Image (tube, rainbow, N blue to C red; front, side):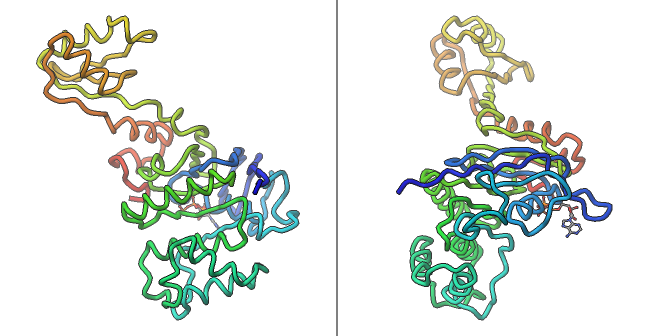
Length: 317
Ligand SMILES: Nc1ncnc2c1ncn2[C@@H]1O[C@H](COP(=O)(O)OP(=O)(O)OP(=O)(O)O)[C@@H](O)[C@H]1O
């Protein structure tokens, strides 16, 4: 089936609640066929923006459109956009099937779609269990099942990875990838930095309601640097910067200490092979994960709390 490709467009969007400016002159685009991370610390304005996209909150000014239309103007809103905002909004006494039946009825979706989404999300065996006993992973799956009832082309997911264990994250990554590969437009909010690179193709980073950065994740993050510990660090730095095979541009080398280097613009295998070919000793060689942290610290530099947190920390500490 050929699907209609529907980009999300946010243009000069502003929302004020009394004295609070939750979103300020925000503009970005979310492309179909890609998973886009919507990132920012708690209170940055992510949920407010997503609510404006679904018509739950009216903008003070600016526009938020889906396929060029405001949500209210879409001919089949609940079949075009699937959105879930509150991960805990299940009636504890309802079964997964009850929950989905209610939402299917509200959205005007055919009732056999309930069985389909239960199967799609791997919840068939849990369909008749009450949600009060559901694990976080099952709740997140039930949320996704709810969002997918209308087989929407656009998915807006607020913190879908919250509380997932590594297996759950891996499953979510594969699942979102398969939905994006069908040409759907997927916007996933998160305030957990370490989840970003696992899930998304593109990122939109906001802070205090304003855009900080937007673009392909790989481009924003750049390639990670390589850390080297070697008693021959000086000689290794010389061959790295002089090696004609590397250029242009040649790797850039920082001396971190007498036996430590940080190498930019080369990967671990390249540095290892070059050291071996010059018979230079290497005691430690690894990717420098702190470059990811540095990127976010730079992007959100005036977020005082963030400046002390390690890689993968949550911005709300
Ligand atoms: N209905 C409202 N009335 C008043 N202030 C609001 C309302 N909704 C949101 N805000 C404020 O707007 C700002 C942005 O909130 P929002 O929930 O959009 O941020 P967020 O990035 O989604 O944060 P989180 O990660 O905590 O969900 C916050 O200061 C919040 O207190």
